Length: 354
Image 1 (tube, rainbow, N blue to C red):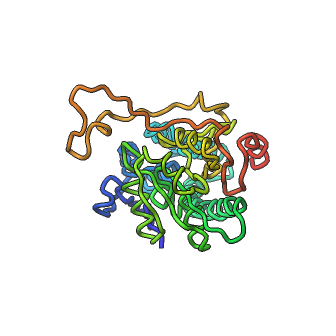
Image 2: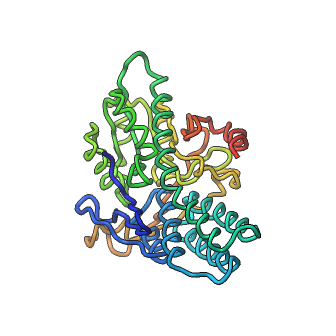
Image 3: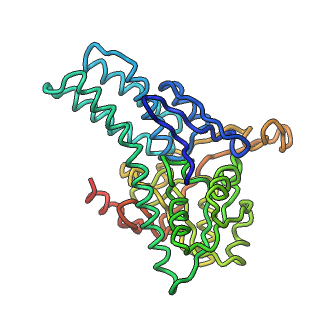
């Protein structure tokens, strides 16, 4: 049974504090939008789908407690708080898209004279709560579609070896996962021989979180440091690379955890396909290419310290971008809940599904 990073029942929202993993499993309560912003910004919750879900649910928790005098007041409150939540981590597009869609919904409900204030609140909250169940269904679809795509490239009943980067599992989504969902499905089909997960410096999401999930699910796996990827590709017969995405541009360029770009370059040299596993909500058609994606920069301390222990020389300058952009030319396919698309197919497919 996969882990639950998000618990939402009876208007109570709790998230598994990922800063404490793997040493301690502790849930913390999110009582409203301010708490939601903090847990996202501090990376107590992370992963683009989970950021959107926790952000929106933190708004739901707050809205349920509030009384509004008018639909206009409620609409203004919703818009302001959603825009604030988007600022918590700007590179992950899912929160931005969810905010835009919810603001549009609030505007529609506010203008509709047949909708009462109570109706508006009920419909708005139900839309947010439905995000949780939809994300799990989408992840399982991504897992099934991705597993079939990878197996279509191998002969007979051959087992596959997958390399993944960062964390894209139950800890990054509502449950099950995107890239890790593909891995879970392959394992369930008994077609997975082994997984290689990178440590993912400087925040060590691979070592702390992905390794934690793989051990929890008893999936055969090996942790490697980020600088071992080329050697692993040369000596360990990797079938495919599967990673997640924080934002996919209209041309297929993909922003993901720092280090993804160099893995894709190495995979190209070793003739290993690279797949992006992400829900359609990670595709941002307003961004023409990866050159226009704003890359979040994180504090120096993430590089210079492990916990309270300094590992870098005092006085050294640091550059700590949280993400890099993998060009579409290095991506074999983008696995979504609606199918696998080559980067150049996104514009056409996105139009069909909207």
